[in-house]
Image (cartoon, rainbow, N blue to C red; front, top):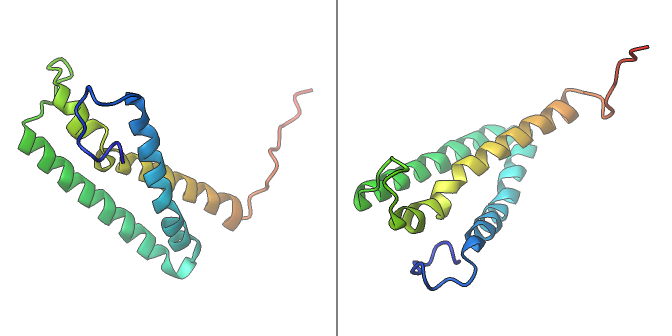
Length: 125
């Protein structure tokens, strides 16, 4: 919860642990999403869920940016950007979901399309 609870910058002992908290929270969501994907009759629900999650995250991101007057420029370094926006799950979840879609697509390619499990290397000589 160290990436959700609003700690001040000086309270954290290990400030880089926000990433571990994000990963753990996302991995809790992963079984639900993969179960939706594996059931071929509910695959459309999987994509609707992804679109809904990304849409909700985008709305929250826009709200946080506007409420805190965050700048888009990296050169206007503001401590609030990192504590209010960057480390929060709503700003990291869309990228994680992109990886979930890539993994599910690869799974479909390997298992459903009948692709070989072994890598075939052409002989050069």
